Amino acid sequence: MDIAIIGSGYVGLVTGACFADVGHSVICVDNDQRKVKSLQNGIIPLYEPGLEEVVHRNVSANRLRFTTSTAEGVGQSQIVFIAVPTPPQPDGSVDLTYIEKVAREIAEVLKEYRVIVDKSTVPVKTGEKVADTIRRYTKGAVEFDVVSNPEFLREGCAVSDLMNPDRIVIGSNSDRALSLLKKVYEPFMSPIMVTDINSAELIKHAANSFLALKISYINAISAICEASGADVERVADGIGADKRIGRSFLNAGLGYGGSCFPKDVAAFIAISDQLGVPFALLKEVQRINQNQIDRFIKKIKDTLWVLKDKRIAVWGLTFKPDTDDVRNSVAIELVAQLLKDGAIVKAYDPKGAEKVAEFGLCKGAVLAKSALEAVENAEALVLATEWNEFQSIDFVQVRKKMHTPLIFDGRNLFDPETMKELGFIYHGIGRASTR
Ligand code: UGA
Image (cartoon, rainbow, N blue to C red; front, top):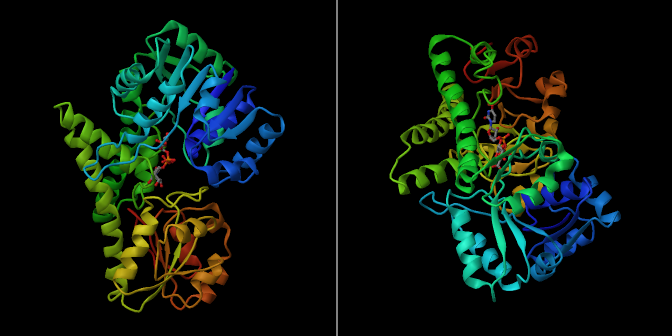
């Protein structure tokens, strides 16, 4: 199939590269000339495991190319995917400016039948608006269909998520569009769920909000565990073993961050408000998420007493492991709060330092080049993001380098008993502290 993807951000680029990898001919369109130039030169603007290889392989095979021209993309493809950002507005609702603009741009160059597929995360009923806009801006009577096809990729494992999806959701009211979309997804051999457009759009917000709710649920339980002396890891195992509940997304920690959950929960609240059916449960999900970091900071303060001039090492700055994405990272918020209280912060992240510098984050903190450098003479170590690298570090060395052997584990990455044996005082989330 000939496919255009408009928007070469994280979703558009991974989708385009993986579509090319299963044999489709893909043109990625982006209006950022610099980004397109670097992509044409083989430079990938983000870190995502496996992505660089897939991009290079398919560019070499002439199945993947990059352009700034929407006319070229739309002209040479049967199907046009929209994968542009849908950022939040101050009130939590979704800013659809980019979607509307792309709809107009497509309309202006539409000459024959095309399927326009929305992959960006959008409020329910956006497909109707996109179709109206295209109809209004096309020159002459050109046939087209609008389809909703939400993505469920997780950063850090986006390539494997795209290649082996749990399900593919296609919201369409046209058999013609549906049969073309099925050809796109045939090589992935995954279950395809066909719905109406509104339901497909809603599935995305409902899925992300439910996952956020699961995280907040276990985080609320973690507070009860701390108050009662129970262990949240054992509780999560116990309830997660029930197939109806499942163990995944029941990892207690500092709370969820990133460019999706905080934005999508806020958007779903705004959407349901606009529809006249307020979703109060999701407001509680947000409150618990914020409370989690507040409780953690309090735990640090309860132990260190005054933070001013305390040397604190922070491991992990990205919003989750295996990505360089620091947008809405709880780790960054944590560093900001420690700095605000006057602590001297030395932070280390395996991949995030470049983006931290690019966005001017953690100003006032020192960025260390290694995990061991960060703990040099530290009075406490805070684990904020659970990179695998931190698990295999020589803790005898860490113990030697630190001024005081104090660990605050914000992701329950380490085993409290092992830490105790190594001579650390250990504080996790929702589990007993050891000394
Ligand atoms: C999320 C969804 O998982 C994807 O299905 C969806 O496609 C994507 O948003 C999106 O809308 O684009 P992502 O934000 O990349 O993916 O990362 P997740 O793995 O879901 O983690 C989100 C946050 O939740 C992270 O901060 C992570 O640390 C936190 N988390 C996750 C927990 O605190 N506990 C858990 O048990 C799981």
